[in-house]
Length: 158
Image (cartoon, rainbow, N blue to C red; front, top):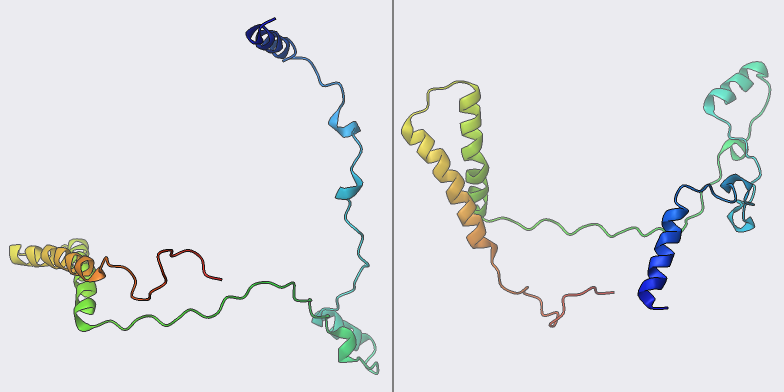
C-alpha cells in the first residue's frame, strides 16, 4: 500500500464519520481534580452603613476599630514601574513648529465652521504654516544613532 492510498483511506473515514454523533457526551466526563479550586473560609465585611445600624440598635455597644477594618491584601509582587523621566525642554524653533503644525489647520477649521470669508493670502498662510511646521519638525527630528554609547545592540537591559 502506498502512502497516498493510506491518506485517501483516512480521508474517506473522516468524511464518512462527519455526521456521526460523539460516543461520549462531554457532560458525562469527570471533572479533573487539578481544576478544583480550594474553598476559602467565609469572611464578613462590615460596611459603614451596617456599623451605623448596629450603633442605633445598641448605642451602649463598644466597637473596636481593629475588628471592623479589613485586613490589608498581601502584596503579590506586582511590578511598579519607576516614574517616567521629565519631558525634554523645547527650544523656541520647536515650539513655533508645533504651533504652525496645529495652528494652520485649526484656523482653517474654525474659519470654515464660522463661515468667515477667507482671503487668498490667509488660506495660503495657513497651509504654508502647516507644511512648514511639519517639515521643520521632521528636519529637527534627527536620524542619527542615540547619543549614549550602548554598543551595537539596543536590546533589553536588565
